Length: 210
Image: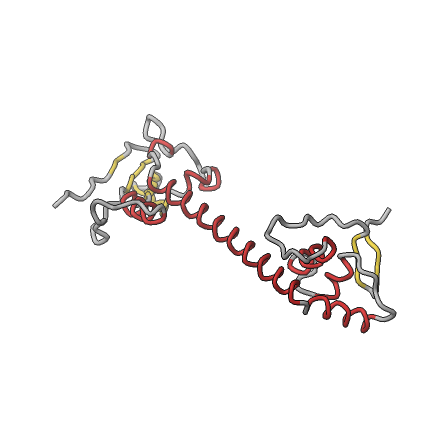
C-alpha cells in the first residue's frame, strides 16, 4: 500500500511524520503551522505550496488558489518569525557540530601515538591507506613509496605525520585555553618515519631546539 498520494501532481505523505522541532515557537502559532514551517525548511525545500499541502491544509479548487493560500500563510508575521527562529536554530546546531568535528580532528592530530601505525618489528600495521582507521588516518599528512636496490626490489615507505605542536595550538585556540608559549610556526617539528619493508626502519632525527 502506497505511503503517498498526489495533489496537483505533487506527491504528499499520507501521514505527517515530520517531527516538530523543539524551539521557542511564537505563542500564537498552531501545531499545523509548526508543521508548515518544519516542512517548508526541510522536505518541501522552501516551496510554500508543498509545505502547505504536506502540513495537511485543504487545497483550494485549483493549484493557483492553493498557491495563493500558501503564500498568504507564509507571509504572516508569526510564521516569518517562526522561520527565522527555526533557521537560526539549525545554523547554530550545524555550527556546533562543525566545531565538534574540528576539535576531534585536531585532537587526533595532537595526541596520536606513532605506535598506532607501526608494529614492534618496525613494519607498517596496515598495507593500504584504506585499512587505516579514520582516527589514525587523521594523523597522516602524506605517504610516499620508493623503490631501491639494484633491481629496484626494495620498497621503502615514508610516512609524514601531523605536526603535533601545530595541532595542539589549533586545539588550544578552539577550546579558548591560555597559551603559555606561542608555537613557532617557522620551525618544522613534523616527525617523518622512514619504514623499509624489506629492511630496518629508521626514524629521522627531529630538528634540534634553539
